[in-house]
Length: 267
Length: 239
Image (cartoon, rainbow over all chains, first blue to last red; front, side, top):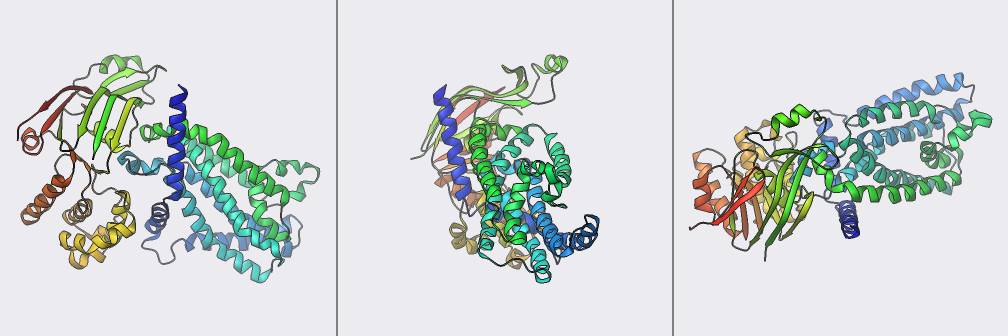
């Protein structure tokens, strides 16, 4: 019995390693998907960037008034939070269909399965790169505090992407098996948009600030937001994010090892 | 040296949302298709392959024969590595090329040129492996300047020609085919036939699933018969 388990584990580890190292496959598939969606449009993914930009431009002044906060401090908070939220939300939502949409490739057999998760992660990082233009515009109007902590921003995006790998493996498998889950996840993500400090600041919770501190999504936002908005490294959030990454992989790799071979039967 | 060892392979497809007993009773021994059974956790499953064992070595040209749903395609997919069997083991030594769906990976919105690389990646090649072959692929497919047009502008014949040219540009040690590929009009199909012959000739092991016994008799030296997912006979046939 244990020999089966160790064989499964070895195969899963090989799949994950080959999948991550297949840098000739997942970037191509990711770009392919982006091009496919925007092949005949001039602006491509920038359409989404424009619509998010317009939304932020409209909501910034309105909500700073509603929440009684200075626009100069609220606006960058909203812009950074919103753009990073879009990354996190689309990573979660698309992770659900990572394997389902790759049905044809999976049933043909050559590729490591983790490639399909890498594709989803990379695609959304590329799209995030487009949305980052909004931040540049915002920072021209409201310059961020310039200090060494800014160097951690790309690392923070990488940390989000790495967390998305384990989450993607897990959600991808779960959703391939139970087809109702993607819809449930979508609703949860929608609700979490309001429950997570995107539109509002965690400090506004006063003595209920624990509600933000125990929200893992808040920490993913905070590691990017810390340097860009407050000019400081969000140490606690970094600890939370790194702990999530370690725990996530530790929990998901055994699940992946157990069910990896079933994915082809589920999709 | 290419080698394939298949030992006591069992493949069940779980059918979710088919729990009714009458469904089970009605279809338990259907005329076509694999056996419908229940696995240990009482799910309805289609038993596509059951206790299949065989060994293939260099020089084997195997024809898979059986009625619809007897497990031919499933067996090809097991050999391709897509389905890991529920029970039993599959050991494949050698580079596998599966020609089950030669257009897999191609994208109608991408140009023919881009599709050469997309298809190549799906076949397991790196762009640097494909680049030296591009000239030859374009020439063989006879697409000319169309190669720089999106594939959605192609006729289905043109798209097939390109898919065929890419899929057969490199020979593999183990070749898996579901029915013999034939593409294009009279002139092209003759050219394609020659090319496929040579790819098949270079492969160390060929596994060809087909309903056409005469095709199998001309191309194969062994016949594997499948019936309801079970291997009923392996026979050697003369040239």
